[in-house]
Length: 485
Image (cartoon, rainbow, N blue to C red):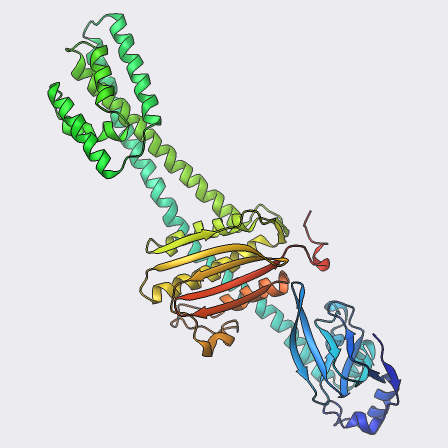
């Protein structure tokens, strides 16, 4: 937007704090290279447009805002003479994108001294060469520091997750190893029992009945119902009595295995009717080994499936085999993060998922969103642990107007009002020395706001703290060139 041209007075320009040390000759060159413009209330420039001009306010009122999601959020409003905005980094040339990083509007007739960006760069290089070198070092040094700090924070999170993942993998792996060793022993005993039965010179139809009972027993194990402790106890007593009545030794040891496998007195009656009384003890012993091997194979299957599930979750969390920018299901990302952090969350904290599964996939950087979830869940767990270690973490998704809401709610002590405005500042932490970097929320804010054009906010009172991430449902125009397809 252009304003109405006004006379440029070197004396007036020299009264602004940016230019008060310039010589009359330099002020004359400024007026010759630039112009004074009067803008009526309304926009002056828009965030994301090519940054072509450097603006210095002479008089009036200016408002700066940033686009967050679909909203313009006001970040500054002032009537102070001499404030400046626009192409402030023109002296860096094409080494950085020269675009307006905010939007500017005026709320009353406002005069600016307007200097084309390339002229601003020329004057800076000519008049302040040392300052330009220092500013370049500050700018690129700050960017480098931010990258290093972000990488350090990711490594800290990865170290914590790796320890948790190792613990989670160790349990099913150890269970599978134990079950495999026990299975080998049971199979050996089964072969021994079969040899004893085979030496009994039983008729072929008796052996066929026994094999048929074995097959049907294995099928019954696969369909075993889940019993309550009281139901299991009652059934174990009944099975023990049946085995004792039929002179089966150590019936009390066999009963729990049979009940776990879904076998009951009626099934044992069918076994007794199918074999001779002389064969019954050996048949029951052989079926016991059959049941045990089936249960052990189920345990091995469950353990290896658990390991596979954890590996899949780790791949989903790290996004190692995925494009950096893609259409992502936030629920998959949340589930993988919760699984990766399950060891850290522990048993005392109840996790409640309130997902709206009808929500669409959104364009995002999934690996970086997983880092946000990690930071917010970690903070919630720390808050609950600090309040005694028992509590509830609720993860909720919903549609909030035209944005997708991901909310992390914990029952911890809350964020004190006096520090609420500082929690997103870099290096601010309430954790003890050595336990927190103070960067988690700062990095999360930059990932959500700067990279995803979303919002990260907090609502808190004792016993109810909610960190809310609001993400746009569609990609910003500047993101469409990324690897979305």
